[in-house]
Image (tube, rainbow, N blue to C red; front, side, top):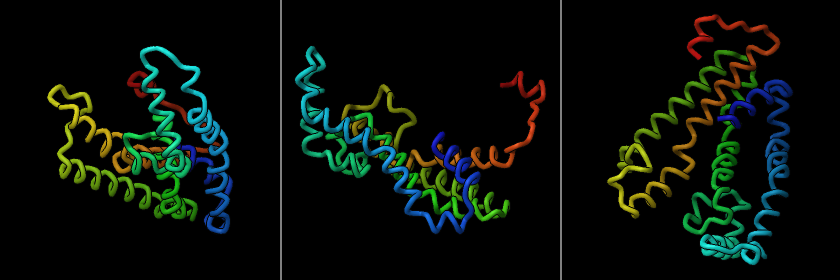
Length: 206
């Protein structure tokens, strides 16, 4: 959600629709170049000698991660490891970087309407995209017959693995919070420079 919020709030402050479209390549390159050095360094360390400086009961997991990095490092650098190499994740916690990058790549579809300067078009794009994602995700959940929680006591290990692969680390179900963040980013943009006062009732409820 935070990525969507900052994305809208920052872009509306520094660019127009025309400039954004002209510099769309910069929009993507800036993101990739900012993340690549740290991610590539992490992959290199994991694939080379991380398993040599680790010991104890958790060593087997580290060793497997090292093997996974040596074979599937490219899926992590391309930000598709959550879709392609589940079960062989290089830097397992980096699956959310893939989700975040994939949603970031799709965000210009909505951003071009927000940056147009027309509030009605901006709100229609934001609310429309959010409703579309929520509707599609709900249908997806019914079709896949997912339970409400990944920690359901009745779930077998096979079901848990299926849930993790096709829901927990999948981009589709993670899209709604991103678009909610975009909505709040636009609200903050509209309030930019204004002095906003919260009522005592609202403060107490918070």
